[in-house]
Length: 191
Image 1 (tube, rainbow, N blue to C red):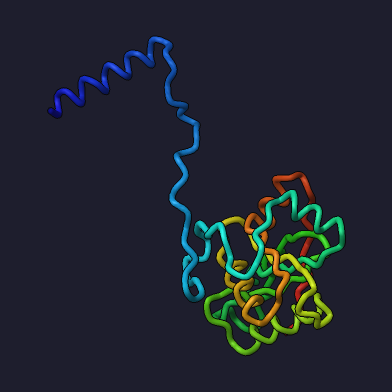
Image 2 (cartoon, rainbow, N blue to C red):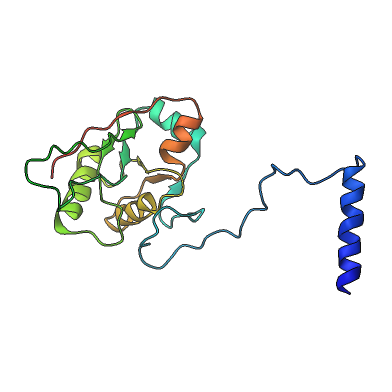
């Protein structure tokens, strides 16, 4: 049986070598089954395939994100901030890598982890109140990068806080840049 399978593979290889249609070596592999939404928040690894849905929010693509941005809808970036290492000597100059984001976005850094401390929770809640002017029905877009669970987690929290017009942009800055739009240096929100 193994010999027959090997022979069929060799014959198929010969046919492809002789010019018959062959699989494209550069073609993307078949899509994996969609990732299911977890019941709670997703923990590490945060850089992994995300679900195609976010219960209570609307998932948008790049064309929709561009249109919303052009209309002036608020954008909320939740990409994590690189913090000064605890073991860095006291007088060492710390220069974290700049974070690039979608223009006019508010950067609510470190608010997409599975567990938030008080400062992170306050940053998310206060930042969302700021962009919505306290109106739970005010629409806004929440994002990070492609395959970033941080934006999914933060979007889920926004829905749990009662926001009814949460738009989740799962392609984030990667999708924005791929569309030929510029990214700008993010401004750190205090706290």
